[in-house]
Image (cartoon, rainbow, N blue to C red; front, side, top):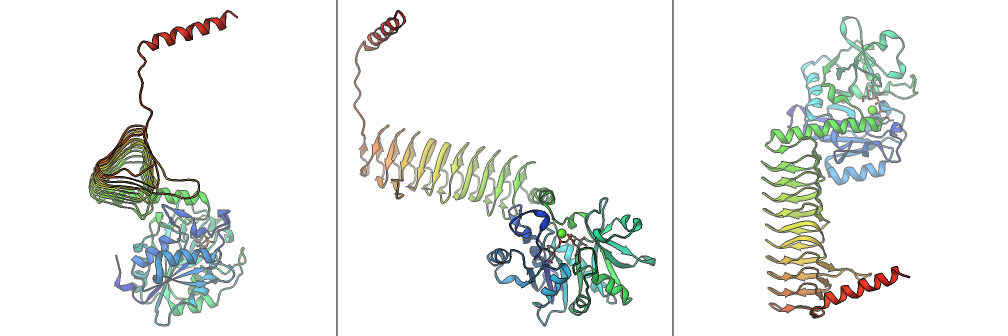
Length: 476
Ligand code: UD1
Ligand code: CA
């Protein structure tokens, strides 16, 4: 959804902090939830809200964060550098230097609040529009347990006069405040310039607090609009407990949205942010759909499957406990149970891949089948081929990978090895147990095994001999 009222509004997202409480080597805002880094979500909210420009303030772990932003958002997002992490007010100052001259208004929020949506930020901006006399608008929210958040201090008559950080609470009256600061601020660019310039680090953490732009207004007797927010929105992720708890909420939210859109998503299925699902698809319990996975309409992904960046065609069935990665599956196909589709496979329409079949970098044509126990690596398999149980594509000689080509309609008998590079021609037949080392012409039969000999009555003689040997052993 976009809001016209957010034209000429720049979103400033603060993401330069150390994230000390994560106890991590990597930048806090790059820790993922539901398949995307934390910082993805507030940026998405700003873009969806229709902000004309989005500036992310980076600092700690800057190179990695910038790399991610460029890859994911291209030129829709710009960055500003906060050289030293001296607090959220200092970060906002750093962001101001990147704000364009034509920008009239700023929406400032934090990069560690992943549950925030477009409407949550747009509402704060709209509240400012609705109160032309107010200097600024801030989101507020009441919580049963406000621990860790800045508290909204109201003066006589109920006007917002200050935000006090947890560490700076002065008395029991302040400790008894349950109204907290989710951290979404809207004001004119001019107001931000003026109030940010006045900040001083006279607080428990010796930092420049962005929140002090509220008391700046109060001191000038300018009014501050409080905008009621959903409690869910504010969840700031400071440590890994909050990371996982925010993620749980987001998984539920994603599943609900797909259910309402016409997909059966059973409880306990986990669908990441970048996944898309077709109508009437069924996603069973314990399924994980990751990355850019796309499931076609009427497809079924049964219990316990893990799919990462996989495109599955309509009406295909992925049976339980199959693992598929970076591949495509056509329509009306059947995979699993217990299949392993490794990267770069393209499984054709109506193909069947059965239990304990592993494929890697292999294309499989329409209607071809490999139903049991096989390794198909670096293969090119045509349509209507049948790959018997126990077939192995010997693709690796210890130095290089080689291709096995199976033409349309070929039949590979069970327990065959195909020593690549090798080609089995159209409608050719490979006898069970054959080690194929030479190309097989179209319609030929390849067979390479020791001829069978039947020694009549020999089983009885053999048993008698072995029994005698065992008894001789005992009597020793
Ligand atoms: C902040 C608010 C608090 C609010 C809470 C909501 C301040 C002083 N406090 O506290 O009132 O209730 O968020 O979640 O603003 N950052 C920088 N540079 C810095 C420091 C921080 O870019 O020098 C960024 C961080 O990367 C983070 C965000 O600002 O994304 C918030 O910083 P954090 O330290 O998590 O603030 P809180 O203590 O959560
Ligand atoms: Ca935080």
